[in-house]
Length: 208
Image (cartoon, rainbow, N blue to C red; front, side, top):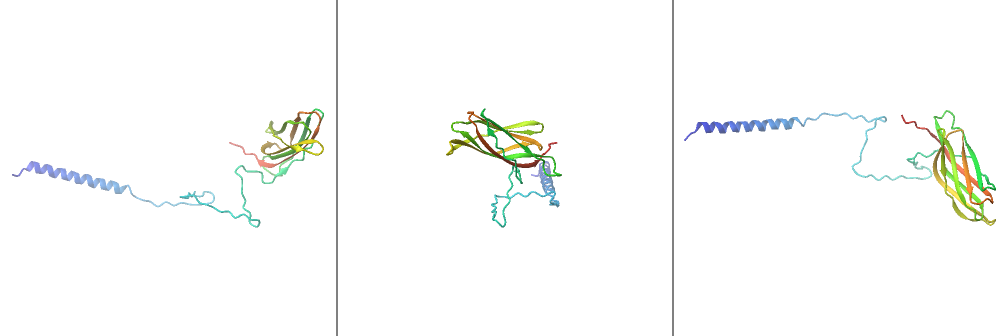
């Protein structure tokens, strides 16, 4: 038997389902539009490139084509030695010497001297020991102090003990100032100090 009301309901539901499917299809296809993008790569604004995996680079280093390697700490490119310090240890077991830091090269930006290497020899009477070895510099109106360790190397034929200092440091000093070396020993019998400093001028970076 034919039932018109039930048949009409089925037709309406089918039409609604088809409309929903059609709308869904249009929405998905509308979101996949693509547009061309122009990328400019210049020396001022280079485009970063990321490798998908680790790349091994081999550097050939020889006398005719040396490979230049720069430290991340920006070491001094042209080391400048300070005049040698050679104070005598007096009767009080104490020595004091100074070395003057000169001006940076002409027409250079604001610079400071940085001491990168300190080395020296303390010739002491046998049994005498260094109590402290102190370097003092002037930086931005204040003072900076650095204490250095010394190692006993042995006794020479004359009966003097030798303590050696060899230290890589990073101590700043303003131009036209003195770098002071102070040595104190446990004995008042005297001795001799030979000390050398090496470094160079580096730019002063101001942080805004």
